[in-house]
Image (cartoon, rainbow, N blue to C red; front, side, top):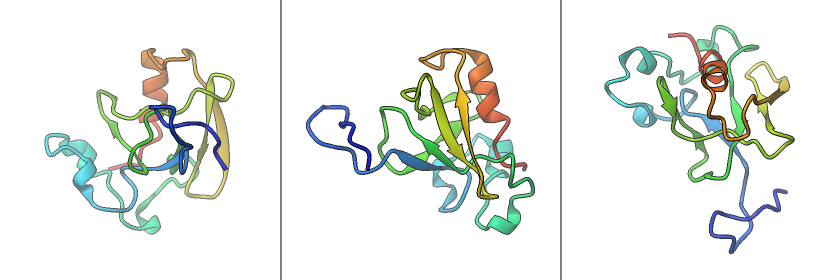
Length: 123
C-alpha cells in the first residue's frame, strides 16, 4: 500500500499508479485538436500493435487525481513519479515492468518528455 500523503498532507493516497489516457475508457481525456493523438486511443488490447513498448500503468507523481495518466503531444499534463531514486516504474501491456531513471528530478528536460511520448500507442 502507498503510505505517502495527498498534496494537502492530510490523508494517505488511495493509489499511486494510473492507466495511460490512450488505453481504455473514453477519448474524453484527449483534446479534440490533437488529431494525430486521438487516433492513438485504444479500447482493446488487440488494438495495441507493440505491447512491449507502449506504456500502460505509470507510478504517477505528486498530482495523482483521477486514475488516468494524461499525456499531450507537446507537454506533460500529469507527471510520472520521480520519488523512486529520481525514476519511475512503468508496466506495459505485454505484462512486463521497467524502471526508468530521469535526467531531471522535476522532468524538465525535453529528453524525458520525448522518452515518454515515444512509448505512446501507434495511431
